Every structure is written in C-alpha cells, then in structure tokens.
Length: 163
Image 1 (tube, helix red, strand yellow):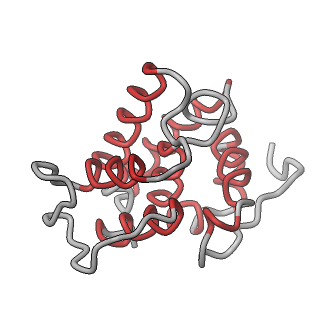
Image 2: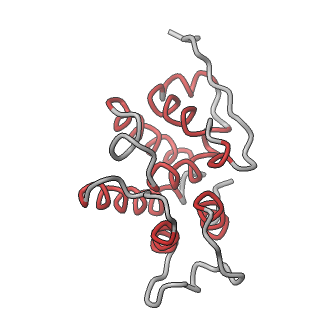
Image 3: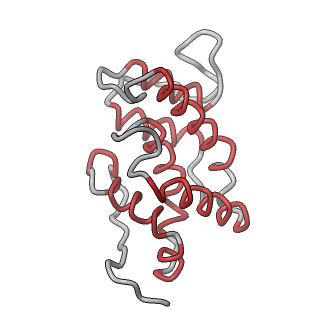
C-alpha cells in the first residue's frame, strides 16, 4: 500500500517538528492559495527552523523538482511497472551521490523516503541488490530515528548475494 496524501503530510510535519492544524486535509491549506501535497510539504518545511532546501537557490529549485517527482510518480508506486521505473531512475541518480540534492539531507530525500518506504519494505534481497545505490541511500536515511519514526528498520545485505 502506498502512503496516502494526509499520512505523507503528517509524517513530514512530524519529522520537521512543525505544528500542524487539526483539519489535516490536502485541500485545506495553511498558506492561502496553496493546495496539493507538494505545496503542503514545502510550506511545512518553510515553517521549520532547520534548513531543508540545500544551500543555494539552485538546490532549492532541485528540491522542489524532486518533491514534484515524488508527488507525480510516488503516488503510483503500488503499480509494479511504475515502481520498477521509479526505483531504476532513482538508482541511476544516486549512483554518484549520497543525497538527491547537495551533500546533506533535504526535503527531497525525506519526501521520497516516505513515498518509497512500503515499496522498499517489500523488496527481496535480490531486488534490493539490483538497486544497489538506492538501497545504500535508503539504508543511510533510515538510520535517523527521527526520520524513520514508527517505521521498522529494513534489512539490507552488506555482501553481494547474487551474481
């Protein structure tokens, strides 16, 4: 099961430690004129005291693009073909970097972690090995208990099991 919109916003809000309104609905926005899950996630991050958009304007633009990617494709990762495509794309992007944007954790990483959790949870060891860079990135992120929240740790093999 893929994370639903309200759960996604709740998890991001909890991670960011941002006060949320009681009527947490993607159509009820704390910022006038902003609707939708991506805009809600960004507005929550803007309320946070910690930086979650990277260090430069370019980083912020990339974070916004990754959030849009998470919303557009992440919501459909329960479809096997879409999940494989998303995992393959992210694996390629993460081949040369530790995080999606810059050299530190950003809202982009947080959002995609929550969107992909159920997919990665259900991958076999062989499938995790096929997405080696994504698995490394995901395993790194899940070590942060504040980010992981109530999600259980997913096991990854440290040694290649399949050739």
